[in-house]
Length: 579
Ligand SMILES: Nc1ncnc2c1ncn2[C@@H]1O[C@H](COP(=O)(O)OP(=O)(O)OP(=O)(O)O)[C@@H](O)[C@H]1O
Image 1 (cartoon, protein in one colour):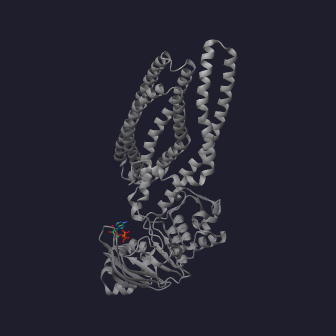
Image 2 (cartoon, rainbow, N blue to C red):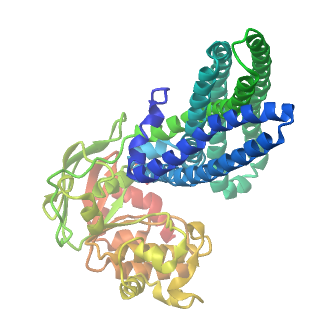
Image 3 (cartoon, rainbow, N blue to C red):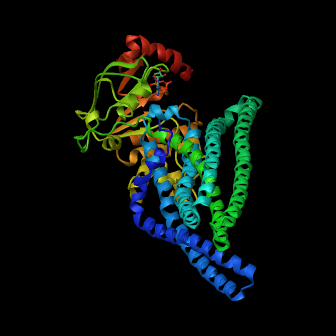
C-alpha cells in the first residue's frame, strides 16, 4: 500500500518532466504575478494616507501606478494559468493511460477480484480527483504558497515585531487546519468507498436486470439499492458537515487575528516604531494573505481527498499482472497447429489442482471435442492454451515449441478463441471483425464470408460500416456468434478454440452459425468445448475430462462401444437431445 504522505503525489513528478519548458515559462509568469503583491501593498501605503490628506495629485499618481501593476499582474496570471494547465492535465491523462495499460495486463485472477463498477469508478472519479489536485497544486497551491512567503517577507521588512505577533497567530490556524484535514480525509475515504460500492452494485444490477425482472426480484434489488444509497448519503453528509464546520472556525480565527493585528499596530504607531504609511502598507499586505491562506486551506483538504483517490488508483499497481514474455522468447513462424500436452497440471492460486497430469496429442487439422461435467476443467484448459494461465508442471507445446517460450502476442495470433458469450465492442461491423488488427477490407470480407456472416452484413443498410451498439445489443445472438467467428478467423489462426454457446438459437439461426463454424474450422486444429451432440459425433477425437483428468479419449463410436464415463454423459445429456 501507498505511504499516507505526499510521497504518493511526489511519485508523479517524473510524469511532469517532459513539460519542463511550459513549467519554466509558467513559473516565470508566477514570479511576476506574486512579485506584484508587495508592490501593490506599498502603493496602498502611498495611496491611503494621500486620500486622508486630500493630496489629489499623489492619489492620481498612485492610482495610475496601481492600475499599471494590476494590468501586468493579471497578464502574468493569465500566462501562469494557461501555461501550467497544459502540463497538469497531461499528467492526469498520462496517469490514467498508465493505469488503463496496467489494467489490460492484469492477471485474470486479480481482475476477477476487482468488480467492473469499482474499477470504472477508480478510473473515472478517482482519476478526475487526482487530476484536479495535480492541477490545483501546480496552478493554485504553488502561487498561493509563494504569495504567502513574499508578502510575509515584505511585512517583516516593514515592521518585524508586528510581523512576529502576526506570525504567532499562524500556528493556531495551521493546527486547526490539520486537525480538520485528517478528519475530512477519513470521512472522504469512507464516502469514496461507499460510492464505489454503489457503482459495483449498479454494475451488477444493470447487467442482471433481465434476471431480476424474470424472478420478480425488483423489490429485493430496490431494497439493496436503497440501503446502499442511504449509507452513501450518510458518509457524504459527514464529509460535508466537517467541511461546513471548518470554514466558519477557520474564518473566525482569521478575523480575530486581523483585529488583534490592528490593535498591536496601533500600539506600534504610538510607540513610534511604524508610521501611518507603513501601517497602511502593512494592513494591505495582511489582507493579501487572506486569499492565499484560504486557497491553501481548501487545497489542503482537496489534497487529502486526492490522496485517498491516489491510494485507490495506486492499489491497482499492486495487483499482479500477466507475467511478461521471456527475455529470449522466440518469434513464432507459421505453424501447422500440432498440440501436445505433456504431464500438464494446474491449480488456481490457493486452490486444489484443477487439471491433473494431462497427456494429449492433437494432430494438425484435427477437430477435438472436450466433454465433461461442469467444473471438469475444460475452460481452464483453454486458458492454458492461450497462456492466460501457466501450467505448474508439465509442458504445453505448439508445433513442438513450449508455449512458455513464445511471445504471448504471437501465440494469440496463432490460437484464436470463439467464446461462449459473443461479446463485441461498440463500433462498426468491420471494426468488430478486425478488432484492432491491421486488415484490408477484402480480408474482413473474406473472414465474414468464411463465418457465413457476409450475407447478413451486406444486407444491412450500412453494410460493413453499420454500427454495433454497446455489447452488440442491436444484433441477434446468431449474428453476434457469426461475427465472433469472423473475428477469430481473420488472422488465419492455425488453432481455433471454440466454446460452444449453450443458449438456444432458433433452427434457422443455428444452421447459419453451424455453417459458419464448419467453414471456419476447415484446415485448422479445433478444440471445442462441446455442448451439441452433432459436434461431438463429428469430432475426430473426443476427450472426456472429469475432475481435471482425461478419463477417456477416442471417437464417438469407440467410446460408446467401450462404455464408461462418456457413454454415461451421452446417455444423460445428449440422448435427451435426440429424443
Ligand atoms: N479464476 C478462477 N479462480 C479459481 N478457481 C477457478 C477459476 N476458474 C475456474 N475455477 C475452478 O476450476 C475448476 C474448473 O473450472 P472450469 O471453468 O475450467 O470448468 P469447466 O469444465 O469449463 O466448467 P463449465 O462446463 O461449467 O464451464 C472449477 O472447480 C472452478 O471452480
